[in-house]
Image 1 (cartoon, rainbow, N blue to C red):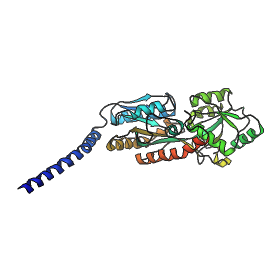
Image 2: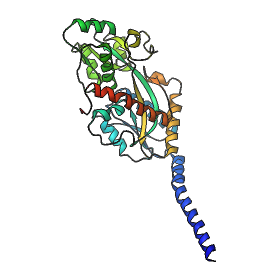
Image 3: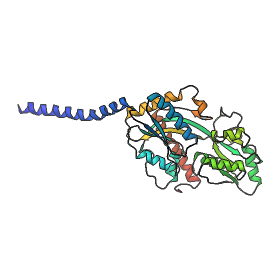
Image 4: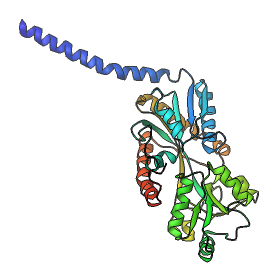
Length: 329
């Protein structure tokens, strides 16, 4: 009788344990089944008006039409995306707050002495969205017309060539630094609080050149306000096939600004999958590229984005060290 009771107690205990383990899974599946049931917020860690904002608004519009729930875009600029990223890290892990991240997410750990979040542990990757190469744009009156001519010009003049970018440690800045190392020429980074102010100073003739994403200066290029010296894609870029690559001009520089969606760590996997599937659906819509000039739409699994972020950190951290920016901000 005692053995029977003991056996029954063990069985009941095992069933209770199994039930307690199954409960979170059932809750997650239930939450995913009704997701989304309230407004979703997409954080943009930059000021409104740039490429990240444009991508977020296109996604928000399509998600809202499909899911019949409001999808809001909230700009949280500052501290090289740190403010917006910290806001995401502290948000509930329920899929109702996400963020569009870019290359700053992978360079900030090397640039910053301290961060209010862990770049890998505090976020759940959802998927890649888009990418675009970097172009070296110059004022039309600046003598060099190619990167090779720029190298020759620099070596023939005693003063360094000034250039702008979207900010210290941005992909535009690091692309310039890679070119500087490859070409062995003297260049001086002029720090701006964004790519647009740097571009405006190039157009005005205050600095001779800047490094920017294709789309950021595409209209200015087509209007003849700036001239391209080279592009950082591995091959000629379809949006601007007339611009020669860095590689074909003899400089081993291939760099890409990327855009990906993140959620807070702990977001239930069924909701992660639902968001990933929605991104893929939107990217596949015909004519979407017309809304996002000179940006290549791509997609990935959450795992692929996570591995890509790790690989970018491993690749860019030594460069940040090499140019003396480690822990400088």
